[in-house]
Image (tube, rainbow, N blue to C red):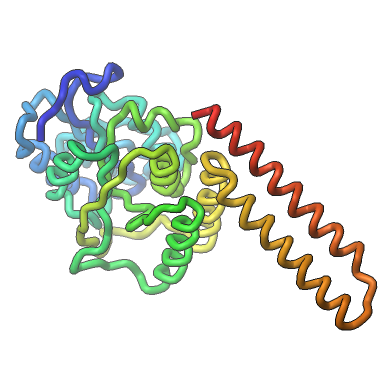
Length: 299
């Protein structure tokens, strides 16, 4: 990997590897050690051009001390603010212009860090896609992830191999453009993926394995899945509102057409319902077009 000193004016040339952590004393030491080894092996990086930064998100165990003892720089939240909040803190405090993020639970192959960094020569964000030979995603989570992926691909109009992988590399100045959009919870990775794709930034994927985690999962399936769906819709409404408004308006017009057939077949007076559906459809489409103009001006 070659680092271009002129790549960003916001931070010196180098790599900051961010590890958001919450009660991960059992896994963070191994991840920090592997991260340090992986960065030390990256061609073109001197020892003073990289850092491993652990953001301790209000842990009540020994996460902070274990990470510090393993050689990481540690920033602590006084209380648990969320996965996304930890990453935003990491982005603000990162010393270098290239960012790698990875989880502290030993689920991702840290040794693939160099491959992600090499990919940045040809793209704006390199994502470790969990489609390798050894992928340990709980079966109960797979249906929701598939539905979420299909929904996101339809709304974004792009193929998305892994929507919310927690192992990725990107440039700090690109990520800071969308800082106000990032949520504090697990939807951070979903938001940054959709923000990049909707802004025509190039995202590439590296097939990786995904191991069984160390410790206990912090994910709450129902709440976090709901938030992810809302994040997808909200992000697309922000960047490309017609992808949401146009299909919804067409569905209402189809509903009006269906009601008109029922009226003709059964002689019922449903003109009021038809009028409401048609007017609603037109209003949604008009709002979508106006929002799309504003989105383009904002870009």
